[in-house]
Length: 131
Length: 390
Image 1: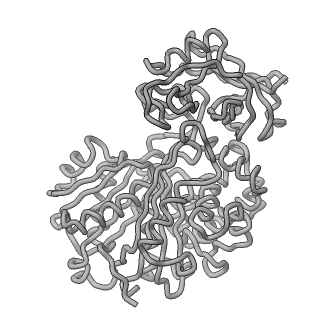
Image 2 (image 1 turned 90 degrees about the vertical axis):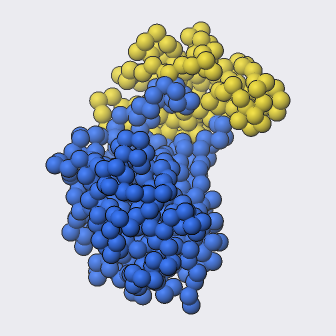
Image 3 (image 1 turned 180 degrees about the vertical axis):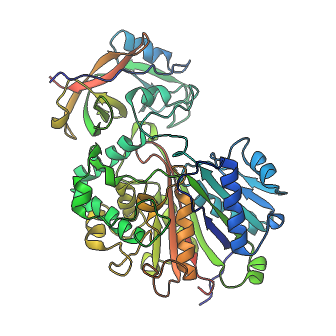
């Protein structure tokens, strides 16, 4: 089950997204929703892409979701699974699936968030099969 | 019948090289431009509008206009990845119709093979890109993004690897007749599904080639077209669209062609059944399958069935496509195939495709470009073209 994993590059972080990455360092996945229209969006922005309000707010995500789609890269030194996971909160995010049998992944599979250290000192949200 | 056309494609040129060891990128642009102008019976001095995308080195069209000795009064450097050049065709029509220019030149060139650029690594667009931190660390490359689209299409519609393989098989049947094609061997469905998996569920033979080279198009006003003879092709309709991740509300089973297609069909006043030939952007087999559905050649989800059993092979199936061998076998210059889609459509309308793949009495054709990534953000553009007497 445990397989060698690729190393994770540093994300680029800016003023709009530093809270997301600070939360990740604490082992939390947070999302941005709009207080004007009530909708969650991803990736997080200062301005709501649904209604253009600047009244956007961070909140804690459940960390649970399902695999929308995935693809296991077989070429290169270390296989890895890229995926879109649809979160319980409704939005889908690009991620990696870890701690799994790459040959047993499936669309629709339940997954939960976990974190991996990046090449720097950041933590990166990734997902593993739900326990 | 004689349909109205606001502009014509007077000249096309596909650079014959597939590995440009001894040529620079500006040189490839200029050689392509020269070829298309010669094809049209025009010269650089006739060009008064210049269109290029991100592959043109320097500051948009400024550097290339200087290199090629152009004196233009209109320029456009719209960048939508591999679909840019199909977008440019539409923008050139608009500019000509508005009287802003009368001879528009569009060029593309690049040399990823000579420079040893594989497409495996993540692309670095710099840290001001808003999506960067939320995608780049996860290792998205071109192949695994299209892989995710294929995987979801399979999940929702039961599409199979064998059905996807038929797209490559058809392209290979055409490429065998193209002396410039990078891959000329005819392959079978078994060859495709038995080739190594690159990234699930795509095999090596589901992926397009990486080639150097370039291409150019010359778009002219109706007045100039009259002086150039009947090799000019009518531009009857054009549509373009941007599709993206929509704030996290994603659907990877369709492309921007759902918007660009209907706009182009409506403008041209034709239907799918009227078309004799189609050029469909084929970065991967799944790109073709989803695009054919989105352009309305079959119902959503039926693309696998539609492309099977040689339906895309000229002389065999009902919808001959990519008779030059397409990006899957012939050429995908600078990882951008939009311009070659238009070029082969024009060859078909002129009756200048290879005799083994020429569609008899080809009167109406479609060319479609896809740029960026089918799994994140893409530019889609459709043009519908007609023979000079269409």
